Every structure is written in structure tokens, then in C-alpha cells.
Image (cartoon, rainbow, N blue to C red; front, top):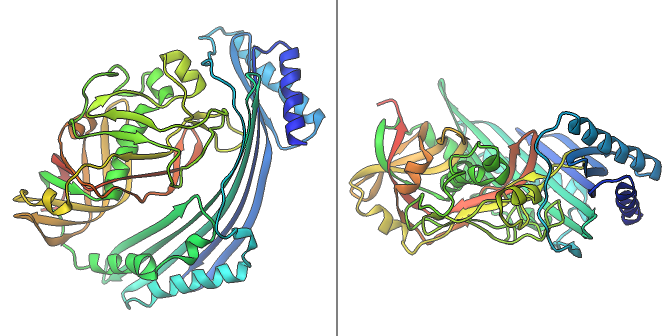
Length: 464
């Protein structure tokens, strides 16, 4: 039924005079459980489904969506999309363009070990309560515990006038734990998350020591940690801090729509050396991670995207439109939060490629610096090229050894300076940042990571 409806939309769109027409069916089923301080606070489930329609008409884009899966609603929505394009065309601006790509016809169903929908909600709640209890009982200084669980099954069917017709069904499961510890007036937090394109086997396989107890141990230990020094230092970052930096600092700056609109600091630096020669950065939707997929939401088959190779900027992430406008090749980087949104350029699983050093080798010649572990949050101003990140915990590095435990650490710097000051890259690549990335009012599934790596001369905010 869905494919027939999408075909009808494409045929009608072309008959109405659209030069390009795209119909995308979106369906997402979500089950979530929240447990806080030993109490299952919420168990919810829901489903969102509908169709988003994009057209190029009179040289301009039009977009509209509907939740009603009927021929009548589909035609009305198509007319609304065309009307929107006509309205834009009346105030003539730069015309819409799309790259010429070979159409794809395919169906992809990502398999799981245990379908979450086959697991009784009571079994899920019991498992999550057990994980939460381990954190809550870790110490009498633990004052608040919260675990969020979600399983999601997303179905996307894309049909367009180029001849593409692809369907992809993707299951994702994620769980996170946040622990607050308190002593007198001081409060500190520990956080852990696990997520992947996977089923409930992900939850069954959790080792409590590596999840909720780990978050609790970090929160409690930070109560006795010291304030960091302030100034410029050599730092070594773990895969979480490194992954956040790569995502925020380079990932967003490499998105073709931001490049074309002039919001990226690397827009004019293609084929130039912008980083240390040991830096290679890749966004890869094809590897295992929370951001994995086979086709993007324009129906383009995903491939690994090399952004920086051996320090040289070699490519951007593209949609059909940004590829056409920048002379690039679309390799599957356009996604939408739902049928209510048009696809825009997004990251998937982005990471710094591994080098050949051990952590001990990276640390050994640092006489005084910081080791940074775990990222709370980060943000980037692409047009200014400035990056800031709040770190969960850190240690002083003295003569190559980790010594004093530190809390409340933040780092900042200029992106292009930091990239050139990466002086050592480890071999221990890990993707450990499953979550949602927000851009232009849309949230989408992503992951990120890095091996341990060293940055010389980065600003550390501290109180001593």
C-alpha cells in the first residue's frame, strides 16, 4: 500500500509540472522506560507515521507532510508542496539543484538478536531497576540515580522521480545512567550510556560494573577531586572527549549545506593542509554504531566519507543539493528527523582514525599536562572556528604518570589550531558516544569516537 501511494505521488507530481518529486514514508515505534531512585517513573510507547513530499517546481523547493495515508491527503499534500515552491519562486532567489545520481532499488532490514518488542515490559523494568539499584547502593553519598531506556524501530521508504525506491528498517536500543553524589554543599555527577543498532541483547549483555556502578564510582570519586590548574597545557584526551571534539569541531564544519552557506571555517580550504599529518577523520554510516544506516533519506546508498586524510581536507558531507552546488559527490549524508522535516546534511558515525601508539607512549614525554576523560557537553561556533567542551573528570600528568584527580574541567580553543597541534594518536579507537545531534530544529541518531590522542597547547579553564 505504501509503495503504491508513493508511486501515485511521484506520477502526479510530474504530471503537475514538477521537475523533481520525492515522496518519503516514515514510521517510528518508540518504547521508553525511566527509572529514578528505585521507582519506575514512566513507561511509554508510541508510533509516528506519515509521508513527506518534496518537489522542485519553477526552480524552487517545496515541502509538505501529512499523517494521513490516503490518496486524497497525499494529493492535497503534494499540492501544498507545489504551492510552497510557487510562493518562493515569486520572490526569485537562487534556484534549487540536485546532483545526478544513479537510482537505487533495494530493501534493507537490519537484524537483531532479540527483538525488543518480543520482551515483556515487566522484564525490561526489572532489568533496569536492577541496574539502577547497583548505582544507588554503591555509596551513601549517592543521592540521585536516573536510568533512561529506549528501543526504537524506524522504517523509511524513499521513492523519487529519479527512479529510486528504497526501504530500510533500523532497530536501535539505548540506555543511559546518570548518578549524582553529594557531600555537604558539593555535588558531582557520573554518566554512562550504551547504544547501537541492536536489539534487547544489548541490555542483557550489560556488565553492571561497566555501566551503572561505573557512573556511581565516578560521581563519588569526584567529590574528593581537586580543582584544575588554568592555562595552556598539553592534554591527552580519551575516546569520549576526542569523539566529542571531532563531532563538534570538524563534523559540523564539514556539512555541505553549512559550507555552501558560508557558515563553515573550512569552506575555502578544500585540498589544503588544515591539520597535523597524523590526522585522518572519517564519517562512516556503514560501520557498527548508533548512527549506522545503509541508505540516507534521499535514497542515496551510504559510503564512508573521508573528510581529512593525512592532515589534508579532502571532502565534505553532502546532500543531493549541496553536492550539486559544490561539485561534490553525494554518498548518503542527508537525513530527516521524521516525515515532517526535509532531509538535511547530517553526520553518522564520525571518528578520528587510529594511529600506532599506546596510551603509555603518548603520556611518557609529557612533564606536566592533563589527561581528560568523559565529556559532559560541547559546542562549536562554526563561523568563528571556536570550540568549547566541559569534561567529566581529569588527572594531572606529571613526568608521564597520572597523579592528582581533577574535577570541573573545561577546555576551549580555535579548531584549526587544535587540529595542527595534535601530536600523537593512539591505536585504541572506540565509538562510545551514541546519542542525538541537533541541527536546524531536527534531532538525528549519531555516534562518534576516537583513539586516545594528544593536543599540545590547549586552553584549560581552572580555579588555581
